[in-house]
Image 1 (cartoon, rainbow, N blue to C red):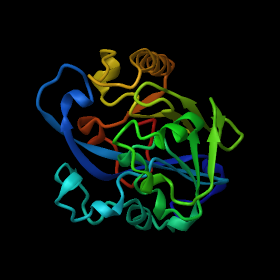
Image 2 (image 1 turned 90 degrees about the vertical axis):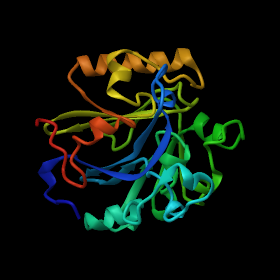
Image 3 (image 1 turned 180 degrees about the vertical axis):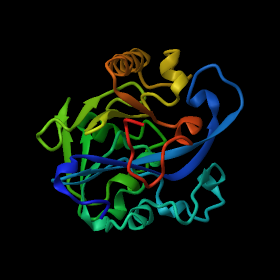
Length: 253
């Protein structure tokens, strides 16, 4: 287990669960070339249980060189279950999976957490089965686990420390999380804000599900940052290089 003394409150950890290389314009509009970006996963250690925000790529990508394996890089130590064991956390201990959305780089590790309940926005769950978006693979998220479909904001532990809130635009039911630790508040943005420049310049990707909703989500994150929250951008390789891996994140640093 990562800690455990009760009065430490909520602790936050981060680790990479695979990479994907895509046109840079997929992450921020108007850019040329391609960028290799991390699949970012967070462990939230609350006195009342352990939660994961996203689960990265599936372990089926380890060693895969065909098909999606040409753009997905999944080192053998990157599956979320292995990342957790390195922290001395049994994957079976995870109580909640918070999926920002159900794309394959955010829900691929769900199946490795057998006792977790998946928390997802109801319209995201429905859209995942619609077949409208090829980045959804039902084998990643239709895993037989309990699913809690929410609508709007949700206080995960009932004490205001972990608040899930809708940030649509990338997908219909994308959600982010505000995590309050003793040292400050983190916002786990997911794909509603891929890069630091996305927020600094209020720039969307070239392709989004709903541009008005996406811009509104960026504006909401901008307001949270002005209020003092630290934003953890969804796929920014430069920012991610500054985030301690598999260590307690100190938001006062």
